[in-house]
Amino acid sequence: MSTTVITCIALMGILLFVLGANVTRHRAIRGADGPQLPTDPADRLLIAQRAHGNAAEYVPTLVVLLVVCSMLTDGWWLDVLAVTAATARFVHALGMLRSPTLAAHGPVRDSGAMLTYLSGVALGVTALVAM
Image (tube, rainbow, N blue to C red; front, side, top):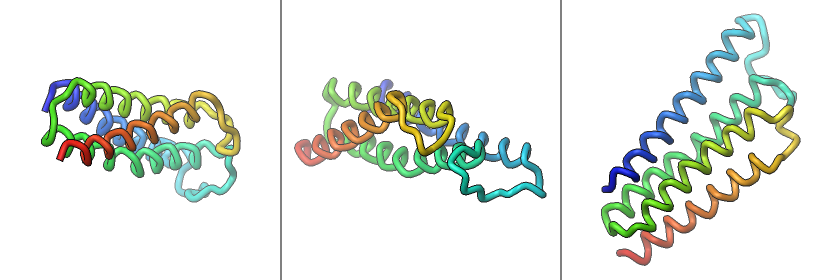
């Protein structure tokens, strides 16, 4: 497994934990008396929860695909896909956290989502082709 792939896996893992810590921070700010399960799409706690939840949905699958692909091939494209996947997850998280509401999409959030889909599909195809 290349250093680039390992670095990208580590960065995505760090991102997931930092987003989780951000949820904890927002819960602490809110205090025990505040609503811990908000439903307002503009609520900062809900935005933090969804940014973390979305990362938790995609990061593990991307990591597994990167590990599997690294076991099957060592082509330069795997490094490119790893960097693309990690960048996509950081861009998407940034787009969500900077959004005034979950109801609004923006180019940062949407490009992060699209890059996530493209890199995930490309990694899946790579695994199938390389076996």
